[in-house]
Image (cartoon, rainbow, N blue to C red; front, side):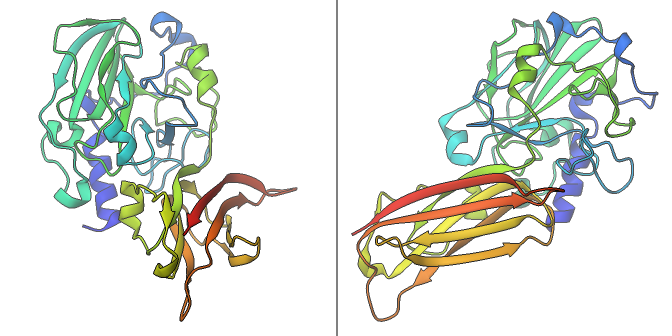
Length: 347
């Protein structure tokens, strides 16, 4: 399956999330809305910007392209929710709780789907196969939240249970139509899908001012972040794209006689025109590897690996330092989207 066909299947699978039909009506106005508890809490129990990040927002482009609520590119065609992710499957296996965003009653809970990449299995055909392991909660007043792609065997509630804001529902997983470990969070009000960042339906125009459905505490934790780091480190070999995205356990040290030193990084949300800086310094502070390049396309996720193979001699022992930075050109100066520095001992 190509990346494009996988993406199309993913959007199709989540177009009607949890069986809640999105009706074609004019966007709701801020005056109409009174979210439960004064606003929804975050659906994940993790530190945003450190362990967790938002990779995809609601798509506001009604054509073949996509735009998030800021008119940026952090979405994909037809996306109808918010994707809260952890960096790799390593962090997924360690366990990150998905929690109730407000008090309510569980109206659906399903836990039977495996955690596996959609690109390996093809898109799901049934609602459960598409959503994976998921939970839906009614909060009264026509408000419903859904939580999709939970880890198999971790769903902690059943239909009819009463839950409080912050109660654990399950763990972030890879079930259903998923290509990275995350929970797909969606809000509906009287059967209308609403973007929790604006209180508007996807038929609204990106950049339009609306009413946040988040609580003040939640809103403060999720400022718009246009790109970020997933992982980085050193290896004594060249990793491939899928291995980096799945997660690599970096070795504590690298042997001098291997003669290969590679620095890798995985990222999300990089854009066309971004400037990459890639550098490795040897134990004496001299340049072991150095390169700069401009990205030619927007990338939902992006991986790089760079370094050198010594011919006829071993690596110099000592501490090597790797740098990776992405800068985004602006009207006056370039903004640093992400920067990482890692070290490794070569012995």
